[in-house]
Length: 409
Image (cartoon, rainbow, N blue to C red; front, side, top):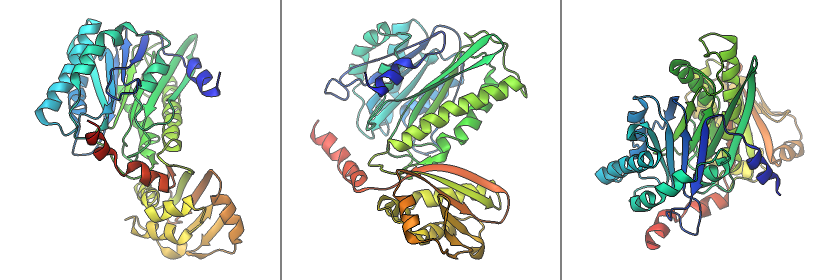
């Protein structure tokens, strides 16, 4: 048994949750492409969605359902985004909710809907309808492996994470799954993430906790700077652990937020490492910015620079490209105060080349994982972002997706 399989089998679902993943025929080749999560108990739920002005039909419908509270199920298809399909897309999203609800004996508005895959191509809704009964009957407490596989598109591996914490004699479990390997950018990415917990928590506190955790994880990653129409992070809590309800400003709530952040950070790092054509995992640390907002601007500009990312792919410690991106980021900077480090080695001090031998810098950037640290020396603002290089493989992978899909229809 491989380490990956062992990890997937060891993932524990929180109490009261079941999951499944089946083949419906959307992706073909007998690949799992339809997933389901179900809570046997009432839940409080919250979500963060794409900030793209073009939003897929499932995003719009899920936002609407979320306002009703007590989401009991999540149905997700891969292989088709159901985005930019007009009224048919809206109708198909509602049909997804209805067929899941009918199979589970709940109301359609208690179903959260997600889709991921190619944009602008009609959703084969009949395949989903036909598979829904099998999807529901396949629900298992150990179904997380199949679910996490069913939501994959260009991903090469399942992305799962889990942790447990204790509140007195009550054990709380937080478990998540995510998908995404391209169109990854700060402020959500082409990714879906589903986090389940059996903690008892109020809607308002879950919403606050989720925002904090998302900002420091999924909103702090970048592969290619593109933002999708379907991005969603969804968190469900069903209270099955029967702990005392987590209260505002309590020590236990802080403990919960850190655990939630841990799971989301684990998943977000997996997203970057599995990026399309990625060979380098890079942590960008920006310190000494005039404000935290400025630190974010700098990290975003550097992480999205094609020139910077190409140099990383070639193990080239080209700090000139880095300081160029810093300069156009929109943040307040002073050129003669900017210091740039690859790992612990200075490449620039005070905006000019440092004395570090080039071989030391090259060896650092040649690593599969390294840190780029940018010191602006203007204030106390800081931000950390996880990103990757840009490779020929990324270009090759993304050249013909839509044309090949239509041609193969």
